[in-house]
Length: 343
Image 1 (cartoon, rainbow, N blue to C red):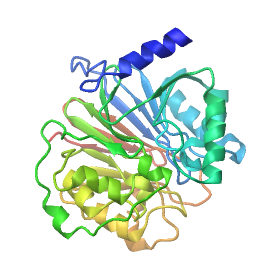
Image 2: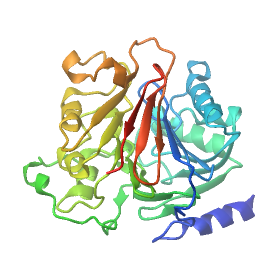
Image 3: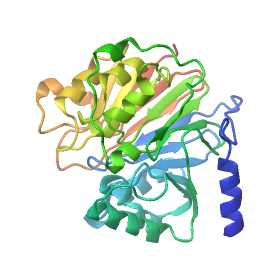
């Protein structure tokens, strides 16, 4: 096990390039499952090579509900194990499901930002449960700028433990005109601000997931210059809460499609929803749940919502992306698909 940990750690030490860059030669697509964990996060990524990355594991309890939903998606993807599990931060709706997950499916390597950095009893408790659950597994602490060793795609760490990339990504770095009117954001001392954020690239397709990063840290990526560039698919940060989703970042990203992993009574704040909805060039916004505590004007039409009732079956949204930048999004509740052509 020690030899495995050393080997994996050495692989992660590349600061400029991931260990296995996207080849561009395979015809297989990239798959992304946005799993409904009722207002937490759990996103399953299956690379064209067949390697898998799970970002967060949802909540604990509920008779293993979230772990069961993850394993359902894994079976749908033809997986017998999950190669990598990345924990963005140690809040219960992201890390809490790990003990039940490892009881239900084989996991290879766990990835995180290092020790808990929040002075909170509940977060210390959840971090301790996480440490206990991953004992015996390979474990890597990542830093901003690193790449993850997943064959067939490039996974770049943009933020971790409160740090962020200091050089713009290729093609990015332009002055951001939206910064001038952006209010000053408050300091956030919670684990949210320490989220591991990643950009996943497959050929011309780009998908961004910043976990629960809050506005001050978002703006460090966006102002005065846009360090990321534009993206095709954006996981709306922090379940669509308005302590995140700074307009200067979201609008600079120019996402073609956004997915909000809100719950029926968590996330989907009208102010954040509106910023994403009005983002220049946005073709569609999708939601995992109808936001019960919002209003009809701040929910998308039902055909773009995976779960329209509060007591639901936990349907997911699935993206299948091609290396030319085109992708198809499927609503598991209805079976309906929408295709987004290459740009």
